[in-house]
Amino acid sequence: MIEGIAAAPGLALGPAWVYRPPDLTVLPPAGPVDPEAELGRWEAARRQVRERLDELAGRAREHAGEDEAAIFAAHRLLVDDPELDGQVRQAIAGGRTAAAAVATVTESFAESLEQLDDEYLRGRAADIRDVGRQLLAALLGVRLDLAPEEPSVIVAHDLAPSDTARWPRERVLGLVTEAGGATSHVAILARAAGVPAVAGAAGVVAAVTPGQPVVVDGSAGQVVLHPTVERRQAVERALAARAERARTLAALRDLPAVTPDGRRVELAVNIGRPEDIAAAEEFGPEGVGLFRTEFLFLDRSRPPGEETQWQAYVAAVRALKGRRLVLRTLDVGADKRLPFIDWPDEMNPALGWRGARLSLERPDLLQTQLRAMLRAAAEGPVSVMFPMVTTLEEVRRLRHAVEEAAASLEREGVAHGRVEVGIMVETPAAALSARALAGAVDFFSIGTNDLTQYTLAVDRTSQQVAALYDPLHPAVLRLILEVGRAAEEAGIWAGVCGELAGEPLATPFLLGAGMAELSMHPRALPEVKRVIRAVRYDEARQLAGELVNLPTGDEVRRRLRSFLAERGVEPET
Image (cartoon, rainbow, N blue to C red; front, side, top):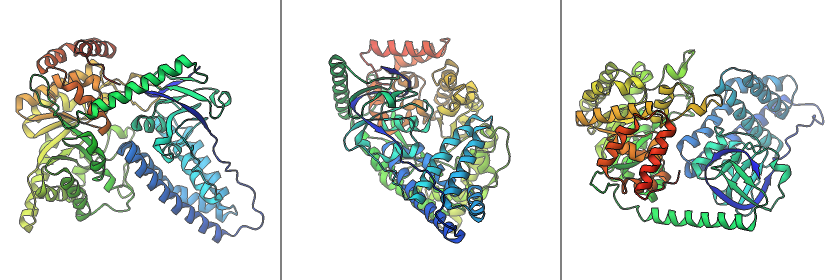
């Protein structure tokens, strides 16, 4: 058995398929280099890679989610990076072939990033190398689409995000790599797609024989290369039980998420494009609790117009057929930057010009987006949600912006509808001010990912401190409870659209904290519904008050597990 890092939970059993990436060695040119011809090859390679990245983004969106698809949208931006383009062109003008220029420039970019103190930027080195590899393959005419012919456990020294997204999902039983960690893009993609994965399994490539049975325990971070008959049978029983559990959960699809004592919770899904709604329907969502509108703004040299945005929003409204659609206004800044915005230099961009702060200073962007949203609301229920809000003054200005957009449509005689206006609660300031903010909004939706990071001062992508990231830390729970109680007192609804909403172990707490809506990745919905239907609301409220007084996240988890076990529920996490 080889010990590694638990990168994506779950069990897998299948034949090993060892992935060895194709050779992309750049040979010296056979004759004189024609710069014009090489520039043409460079442009052709970029076009080919752009198209391929769009395909990979679509595949990631289908099998994982919008956040995972954004990895490839970011890679596409790298292909069009002016500095990369400029340096490649300069190298070609200096006598290099396009392939040699790409190999040299992308590796130089990656090495420069690895020297930086910023953990996030260091992590971008792998992205640069992945994009460089795809460009090189296009230039050298090498195929990267090697794939197993049958369902297999893929074993490799390392994997790039483009490798993971390229393989047909049905042929990937599990992933094992010698490199990488739990926060790598590959791990993120594996978790979102429900593929068990182990990273950091040193020596596994040399130790494994292609085709031999392999057990992957992605929860324990273990790889068993020569499983005994007893071990294989135990895994097969566990997989069969899991399949049976999936069938049981599927039977809940059309049942309401209601507690035994009558508390109803709306279970919605997070999406990034209108077409995601169709893919989510098999899980029975009651609406969309978070529509990330950023996709409309990515990969553009200028912002999308009102008509383009309206078409996307109204397509989602129509697909939902009367169910609620929560549209989040443009949420960029920090690590998400758009080419047509002149970004300031900031020491701490996560604390800087982002979300609603940016929108308030760019009324041209905000008004166009709000007008499109209000027009879409003419055809179904729409809520508008503003991200990264911390003060009452911001809320008042944003609310006024909505009224201003509605008034402009009214003056022009353009059909539009009324919308709920809410905010994401992502900072301790917003949570602690919830009672004041509640009077100015129609709803709260808690973004637990950022709320946890800001509360604990932890960057969850940093390998050095990611272990401190804990959305069940009592300090985070206390803030969530504060928001829930403030919403109840004000008579508005509160929900969660961060990852904690899709964590069934956390469901009793969120229920007891007064959350009326939970919005999550579609695959998480059935398990959360099962928990809600097993837990009494009055008991959950008592539990929520108890949990915020526990000293650690680990004790919170133990108490939640015992609470659920007493009710015969063992959530799969």
